[in-house]
Image 1 (cartoon, rainbow, N blue to C red):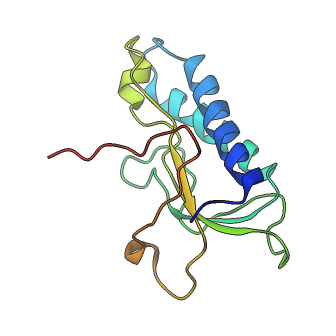
Image 2: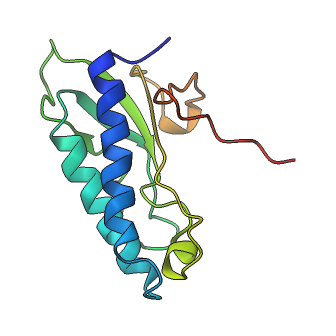
Length: 141
């Protein structure tokens, strides 16, 4: 199962925008600022994409960081029944401390899949669709 081809390219652009924004803050020692610019860049990029998206797994609640919150609707076609609908799992900046220090080991990984209505986000378990040429994360342990 794959995403609509325009969405595949769009999700690559979303990750690129968040990574570029965060890279500009790299090594400044301000992890919350790094996370904030990645979140805002990702939100702007998602809202420019022709999709009816919903964040089902977000980030930020744990550390009170800026966030794309669970239940947030994103995309240029929110509410349009003819648009491609997707549920989205996101962490705009994986490795905020790594970005704040000049290590170069942080990333901006989004994942999406067709929506699953009537179930809570915590019950959601793939199959996640990763953008082409971007390998899924390795499981540790």
